[in-house]
Image 1 (cartoon, rainbow, N blue to C red):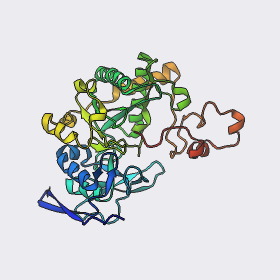
Image 2 (tube, one colour):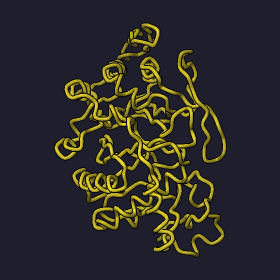
Image 3 (cartoon, helix red, strand yellow):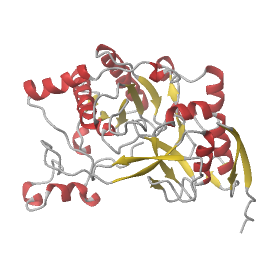
Length: 365
């Protein structure tokens, strides 16, 4: 058995001077294929600190943790883990069940390094600020290539989405997902609660699908999506998060969910955006999301798309994530291929919440 590596201290700047964060087992390998260790990850976090904090700061954050590295078990910490430093703050958020409890807020880089100490690979920030946790200030869409489609196809969909957002008076910011998909974030005024923002996202997604139905789908059930790009509208619901900007992902080559300029999007190979390469990219050309929240858009035109679909096209609510209570106007929670006889007597919520019967997408790439 290899000897356990001695703990090290990581020195970082804090708001009132330097902080020292203890890192135990610094030589623990997190990405075996790349030989990247916990210490390497801590150094990555420090290297991208200003940009990472712009993405995470003043937001509730869930931690995706891998005690044995990417090949081992993962779990999500929503409550701040035990031993959280005194300088780290938290904020109370409300979940779909109506329960409330605190979540960690990553306001300084020492907190992020401490999260690495707790074996966090990926940070998942909520689309809200701590002063107003019920009203999102970002509308987020995940463009997810289904089997038979590629990253390049997701890029095509993202470029069409950018143009649609501009028509609606909104500005899209793009990043790689860290896998094959593309994430588009839009800063918005925090004037609407989660359900309104979700409906705006559905209105946008349906319009995108109408413009290119061979490329884009809004079908929640995998069996209906075909070889298209799924626009995941449920990433805008309460307690649904996406990998934060500059967050590493748990794939063998240590990719990073990386903000890009729109011109870079079509040129870059996302496989080259990794823990090893992103710090230099960021240092060389800066952060494309640095001014993202200087201007915020109004979702009213997108909500008009939703209302028009409801009133003129007879299109209504779409399925919610599995832990949600049955929502008003929501369609039956059963796969289309499941016969009425198979679901007879099974309450909708039980059917949808039982993972063995559910065919949606658990934590998104």
